[in-house]
Image (cartoon, rainbow, N blue to C red; front, side, top):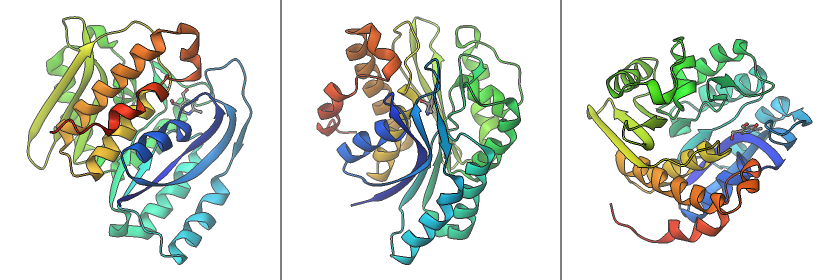
Length: 279
Ligand code: PXL
């Protein structure tokens, strides 16, 4: 079985980060080693939260895993709550060198044109350092603009040609492969676009748009992509499967609109990941 190490916060309530990534990756038959970068009572979109930074625990934990012969096929990073957490992961990645396997970075730091609560703009250059090391980066539209130091344009006003050019610009920062999520098709659909600089191929996948903010959707998306890539799927197929799965989770979440603050209702959809849809 392929093994992934994922570094993300552990939000006790809220169904995002680790508590979303672990079930999805397990369903995709990926052995998942979770390394919490911070312990939060709940995600930061609630009215309040408490957060305990675990950055000084990251290196001792990874050293012990290495001593025990636990090596990853891929490393996948999600939400980071501080520069120190990024420093610790950077030093892990630098120390591992080629043994890191594929480095997948979801720069989960912003949405709808705004940084997440508790993160300032001074955090962006640190996330940029991590993105520069990545083999695959998976920003949403807001994060893509922030990483490129460009003024934000809402997805509904962003034209396709500019979005495609942003894939190239993000790849020039370091990652050979890039996916941008939350792209509008121009005809009422929403989805993602991708670029693989090794093959020179671009891809896109769109599904019907549902109004609203769905917290944790990006975490589920990046987890599906990570699991599928480890199973040997190519980038475009992995991305398309993630678009379809997140859309299904949103449909389930919409049945109970109150539930969306607690993350997507992915539980009812997990079994669908198991069906072999072919590629
Ligand atoms: O889903 C992204 C995410 C992850 N972790 C925490 C968050 C958020 C989004 O708000 O607050 C703690």
